[in-house]
Length: 525
Ligand code: HEM
Image 1 (cartoon, protein in one colour):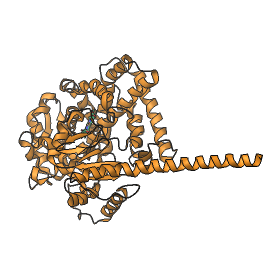
Image 2: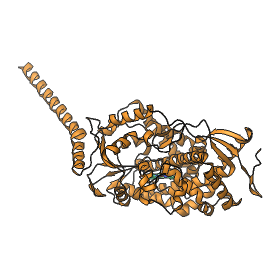
Image 3: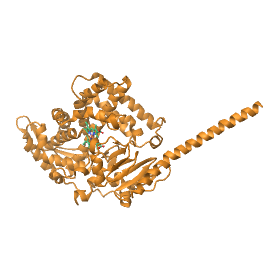
Image 4: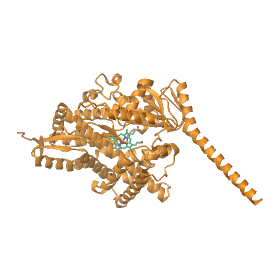
């Protein structure tokens, strides 16, 4: 009898396990396949199609195939092609040809709406509702890098962070940072000058590390009141962290589970802990300067947050600023110098302009404003090489934009380069470097998106522009640049689009700075 009871109990347990396993399988099938299929069917009913997804990864295999094919395709025979889409996002080109400028695709159970139709983009730009948030795709993968800081948060939490951080980048604050930025640039200029002199007047140089150090120094000093030397470890760790999380963790994205101790996860968690500790050290040592760090600390201490939450609030927002303010500006400066190296005629125009505007006086915010050619060169760099490949959003509630009904949970991706290279918007020379196109006041307001769109637009835009103008004007007024034969043009999408092998330039000194006479032309042999 006892044996029978044990047997019965075993049967019950087994049956429960079977029921549990079946329910889990049905649940997974429902979330991974049925829900996204319903969303896609809803779009098809509106006449919006897209590539057919396969179970369970959607269109990921198609995307990988297209990337592999693009990698093995022959290069443009040494010619520099500014359109980075075939190299970086080859699948979009194919899908856009097949399905038009608005189409759907899926990655795992996440549904994407690709939008490159100007009227829909304009509506996204104009939408200020909190129901349109940041895309949650890759949130699990990127968690160690951004946490719940301003870059990735949504709703009231985001609005609160934006209110604290945005005023620190208003124009009057940026004006007050110009001297610090010029100071940071001196280190780079002096080191390049010494190296050019040492090598007999001309130097081949890979510029990226020096430019990153400049950008890191600017952020450290202006926002955190500390020097790059102090912040250096943070930047190095953040860059490692960026590399560690630059590939999607598909399993974590599909299941929401991030606790598998895979090698990549362990590496990212370790780096995250180290950065957390380093940022809190900077906080402890910070003085009473009125800077961004003070504003964040003040907000954390006046909110009703527990110690742990307050620390996370501080660290996540500092990490977001370190990352946002450092990478994209450094990469944009590198692309800009590459383009000037290719276009000596624009280099001459900018050099002359700097001499005319400054006349040997130190740079200030007014002279930066008067540099029209330089402004156009930077705008054109950001049009051809926008660091952010997409503007990404998510419908946190059901929305209607540009006449398209978008259900809750759908991710909206605007491919920035496609908007920037559209010949209907920018003319037949859209793929060429022609800064003069920006001589008309703000062309293509809603289709020029290097700093994003609408309520979530980059709040460091004025800061970044000042920082870029200072660096480029000082470099151009001292050196003539030529693109080195060592340069390999290969834009690559890491988290942002960067030159895969860096930028190699040949520098020759053209002016030297004399305290009494300002910039003095160097006599070239
Ligand atoms: C050339 C340099 C830069 C480029 C190309 C750039 C680009 C962008 C882009 C595309 C976005 C997303 C906007 C959107 O989704 O609509 C963004 C957001 C942001 N950027 Fe920048 N950025 C640059 C420099 C900076 C700097 C220097 C800072 C600060 C020091 C900064 C701080 C931020 C912040 C905090 C956000 C998040 C805004 C929010 O979600 O409310 N950026 N940036």
